[in-house]
Image (cartoon, rainbow, N blue to C red; front, side, top):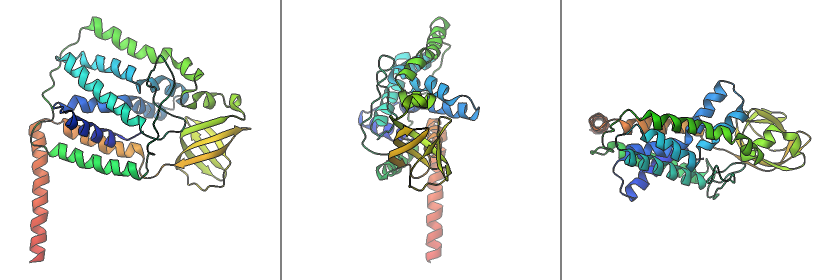
Length: 310
């Protein structure tokens, strides 16, 4: 899936195309579906069961759950309709961009909780040349956004929500993913049923969408806390992130296709996106000072080059 840098850059371009003025909430929505990814980092750090955590948090990366979370957030805004519209629209653009990537063992649950079929359009791989180009373009458009003279959004006026509405809705948001974990497992979403019960998949095709190489002799990969030996002549380095389409036999993986992710990890690039997101959210006077610092640094460097030339 694209990193936050690309998601924010794409959101800014779309906002300009559809002439949105309030970008703050739109940008927030463009990152909203990935709260599941952030949560999974914490569960991994806390050494919680990764398969159970994955089953619970993955539904948040869907239009249905994005709408519910946007509703909860909007209850804290004085302009409920506008807040909900901007956040949910940003989330939809996020999921639309996620659909464009090539996927193995993964996809977008467009119709959750009514269907567990995963969708993708397979236009480009994460880390390939197109992905690198998108990152470069995203940096460019976000710097332009950051240096704009005018504000990127009106002030956010918060209010205390009606707890009779907010509390049941929050409970609903937390309960729905919990109620569908068994269905997610049954439908083998992200191949979790294979990872949880590999013996059931003897001789069948299996897929890993984000496996980490933890040993090279023999090649052993780990996905969601589960380890498998990969029978291949291809050489890897420890720490490589790969996705695999393979056949599972006798506890080992026999690949028919392997893709190795290139470049910096998605999490590292997303931190850059998060930094730009925070800077964009800073109110206009502070953003004006940031812009002034950039200009002063540019002209100072220009003067130094002139002095050296003379």
